[in-house]
Length: 231
Ligand code: JEK
Image (cartoon, rainbow, N blue to C red):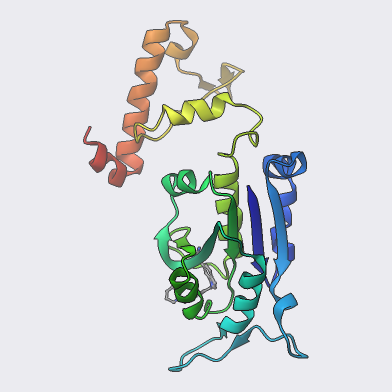
């Protein structure tokens, strides 16, 4: 998979050279490139923003600069990903739907966002355009969202994760419940004991206890998920 990320703060994307994703990039499974949007400006001051039509606070990113960048980087099979607070919420399901794509192009906005005609133009041109939000809180730009999305999608690409078993677990695990609590040695730490059942060697009882813990956690912490599962 090829991933291009365009930003006015390309240094912000440096973590992508680290850890699992960075190693996969090194191994050639993922091909990640980060670009400075200002490379596509044409004026002396390398301007990327302007005042909003209709008034209001802040600045809006210019469509012409983004248009030149996207025209240069896009191919026949590009999916254009636009992180935005007004997007569809990014989920594991969306990560799954993007993991087999040939090319993802992330356009990371700043200020009040990117002129709306950019998404409109590329969608009308036949490109797949995904306007995605990380969640219901406001960030200062799309870079952190792109980092999260690249990590969530990248770890699903065959050859990226070191341990294939951790993905198998997930693929037959989505009963929609949160994870059960996990423990390791020592069996007692600062006066807290690992639950006896986990030391018993009784596999059926362990499985039953974990299932019960997962249900209790989900009901307490995620009433939204619990309502969908219905006990
Ligand atoms: C991309 C620029 C900053 C900040 C104005 C007023 C209520 C905000 C844009 N989950 C997510 N949260 N935020 C983003 C995100 C933020 C971005 C950009 C993504 C580009 N900004 C910004 C304020 C406003 N709005 C009404 C909401 C707009 C994001 C993701 N993904």
